Length: 71
Image (cartoon, rainbow, N blue to C red; front, side, top):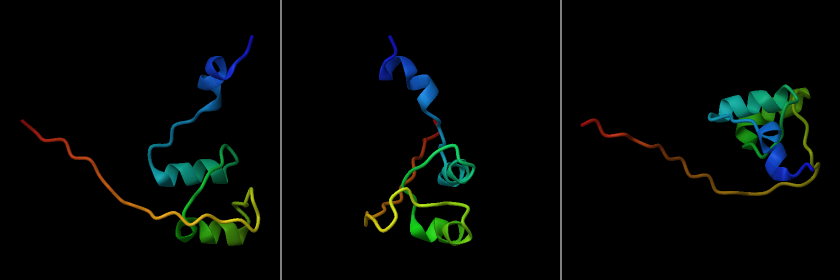
């Protein structure tokens, strides 16, 4: 029997960088929330389309980075 747990390896894709995530979506491989500032031109050109036209969600963005200390 198929379940979400058994299909998970087939339903997920890892895009560790936002730029890669946008490339996957513009290639038709995925979808998700993306900052308007980053994808505005792609939306205007038709390379990306909204899956919920007329709906937006304002989310504050917090940029962070990790650092590994060398010993």
